[in-house]
Structures are given as structure tokens and as C-alpha cells.
Image 1 (cartoon, rainbow, N blue to C red):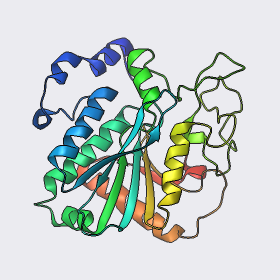
Image 2: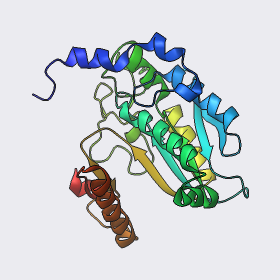
Image 3: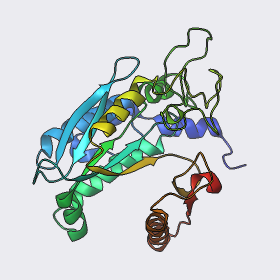
Image 4: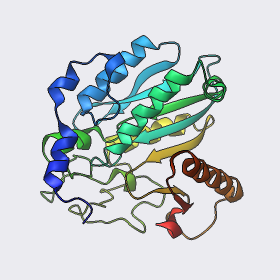
Length: 270
């Protein structure tokens, strides 16, 4: 038994919200989970208070009409620089993802002036950060079902809602690890990029593919650093480079925090 009282743990995660809502940006608590409206307010505040390093924009709208906000983080030295895409919260119930994205932005902004490594990164790179990918599902996980995972799109043949956004991409759509049944948590959708959230992000990535050199997606399962491929047992062309980066990352994590991460291709590591 990992959690003796699950209901109590859930209640501790979600309250007290009214107290948090009254806090200013300088007092924003990065050590608690925040509902969608608070995260989006936080993004708006950052866009105003750190306009030299932060640009906020929307890549589209969700199924329920919510904006899909992204933060562009980096020094505006030139219009096009190499970039890294980071998204969190593609699975609604994995709240630690959006919390991490917020923490990363906080650390970047707070250490930009004092940490040469951070200053170099934000000068030479842009980071496109999407704190909440699955905005409808994340909102639903706060208001109705803490364990909701999928999007909130409706199915015309079944009463089940939603699609697993992480299995809705075009690449090897509905292959190993995905389901065609709309009621399954791993339902891949009626067709590739059927979900407006996935389609909007995919469109943005395709338009900026010349500049985006890395894609990082943060989830909440075990302690693993995974890289391609996930749909087949084969090595990627730049395997040695990626494996070396993963090795250095997990060693740095263990050295700094004492945590042990496994790393490897998703197909053989999961």
C-alpha cells in the first residue's frame, strides 16, 4: 500500500484554493497544484512582468473552446534561433507535469541574471513551453473526476468521452499500445490528429520544424527518461548522442537530488 488514505491525499492536493487565488505573482506558490484558470492567470502575469524574456501566444483552441497557450522563453536577440519544445499535462490527471513546467519557467527567470549556464541557454535558444496541453481534460480533473486522463471530445456512437492525446499523433497512429475502443483510456481517436489540441500543436511544430531541435514531454509515471522509438524495437539515427545526453542527465539528477532514473528507448524501457 503506497497511500493509506487516497481521498485525503486528493483533498490535500486541491485546497485551499481561495487562499491561493488572493496571492500576487511574487507570492505564487510553486509547491502546490493549481487549477487551469490560476495557471493561465500566472502566464498572463509573466507575459507582462517579464516581457524581455517571455512572449505568450495561443496555437489554437481546444474542443471546448479554451485557448491553447504557450510561453516563448528566451532573449529576443534575433527572430529565429534554435528552439526546444516542452509540453506538460497531455494526460489530464498527471498534475505534476504542469507543475514542473511552471517550476522550470520560474527557475529560468530567477536565475537568468546570476547563472551563466541559464543565461547562455536563454540567449542562444528559445524554449516553447506549453504548461497545460490537455486544457479541457485538466479542467475536468479538477471539477469532476480527479483521475480523468483523456481529452473531452464527444463520440457520436458511444457515451464515452475523450481521446488519449498522446496516441492521436500521425506517426504510427494507433499502433502498439493504443486502442480503437472509445471507452479505453488509450483510445487513439477516430483518425490521426482528430483532437484540436493535437492538431494545433502538430501544425505549430511542422511550421517551425527548421528551428525546433528537441521535443520534451513531461508525464507522471515512475522515474524514467525515455526517448524514441516507442512503436518499434530499433535505434534512432542519432542514438549515441541521445543516449549520452540521457546518461548525463540521470547522473546529474542522482548527484543533485539522490533520485534514480532509468533511461532508454521507450519500446524496451517501459
